[in-house]
Length: 303
Ligand SMILES: [Fe+2]
Image 1 (cartoon, protein in one colour):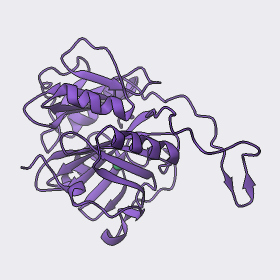
Image 2 (image 1 turned 180 degrees about the vertical axis):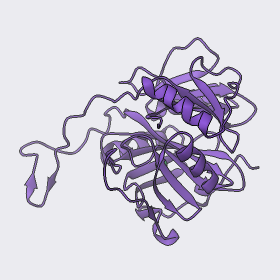
Image 3 (image 1 turned 90 degrees about the vertical axis):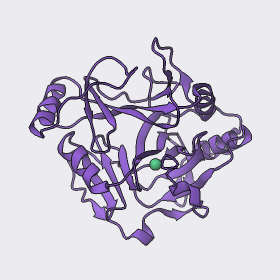
Image 4 (image 1 turned 45 degrees about the horizontal axis):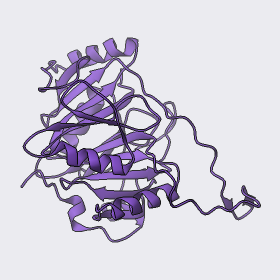
């Protein structure tokens, strides 16, 4: 029985206030909390998706998944049957749920909660050949409009063993493999999103990026420009991925990992004939966009 939601990710960072400023500029809002972590959430959701703990250097503190109702005990049984022992939570972790460690040593929290969907946007009104959806209305976006991530979509982790991570998360927590490139990168899901957790090969574990859904390509670009103006000038995009198909822009965070805006990700219903594909390495990363900056694939936690 699978988990049904990626609820939040928590990082340990050397300066929580710098991290808070970064993510607030990115468009998240503070969520008051009683523990020592900074909690941030999308403006329309009531639950934090990004937690920042103090620590000597940036690293993943934990990941949290949701399994609502009866599925919570079913996940516990799946964990037991897989021979995985429940673990103690990391220091300062939120109360509730059960804890395990993944093969890379990351703490994973499974909580008896379901996903929260953001309110629907009005339909996009675009004009394309043969399909006029906007008449007598100017379409150019307001460059001062609010950039508001709607939800946390996915997290990408570095790992020394992509296959071992895919095996663990599919067998123990029930995520499904969506697509992969050999043992270089793999994308798994626990919702209808193409991916919620992905793994990229490296010499060791690490946090690569978290990705947030926004309402349009314009909103990606306006958000990216705003991050740039605020001094967060390194990153990658605007572009379009091959795997997952989403438009993307990544801004480098204060610790050398990234925060991504995405729009128009592939949707995979629970019951459907989706067949995971093993993509050729040379045609797997992006269809168009600026050249890949070398630091994009650098695991800064190794040094
Ligand atoms: Fe991503």
